[in-house]
Length: 355
Image 1 (tube, rainbow, N blue to C red):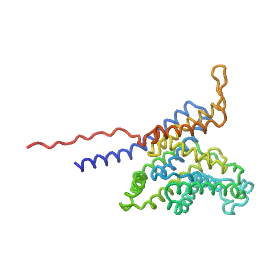
Image 2: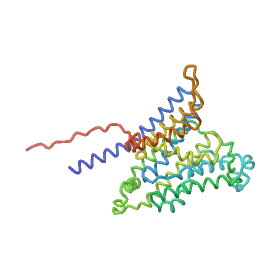
Image 3: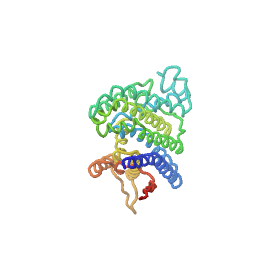
Image 4: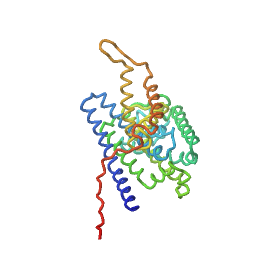
């Protein structure tokens, strides 16, 4: 009987691991197809930004969702990825004018956007490995405060190192190569890797520490090692998302990767539900659609012959109110911590013949 139950549980986990990423990618593909079919160029650009957010928030979920540790520092990894990609792709003449303090080898570099994005993601992961070695020895609120301190440090350095980062001035002239389909490809890759990690031995061990640290430690699970692995992998995809964001609009600024972005990442996870990969993707779609609708209402809309407009700043206020309501009414988010998957075909049990 026990073997039968364990076998059924194994089939369910394997079925979930195979179907959940496929269904989430299909959902994003349908979303993109609808926007491209029914919308205009502005909506197509918005859809591209939504898919970049999927890469960012799913990368964020790899650590937060599996470890249960709230991080306020992942926007810093997006900042690092964006600027490394900019340093490697901007034309040398543009870098000489905007970023005169770059080393000579970097000032003359002119990589392809794809390689530069991968390099930015790799540098972000290296930052995570170095900083996480210290931060992740902490737990609870101390770890959360330490990640916020890291975010503040990166923002202050990037905002004041004018000769290398441009300071508070925007760095312009980035190649705008990220099409909706490029963004979809990165989102799909991130979802597949996130699902694979969640079902790996490291991911399962990390979730065990999330549920009960004492029991996990007594079972011989090294919490620190698994958290550091998830933190580094998470930073890689956040760095990649930062690089993509820069190449969507062609402009980057340190403040674009600070408190507002951190709040939006947390809001998307809370609304969708941080307990599942499905929740991360759902949260991005729901909050992005809500933000776009509220932004249009702030600009004003006609109801018959009457023009109605929300006060400026209503987006953040209403999203924050939605977060509070969801935390009160449905703490596990819209998905309730469950993964979307196709129905599992039941295998009939063989009955023993009676003698």
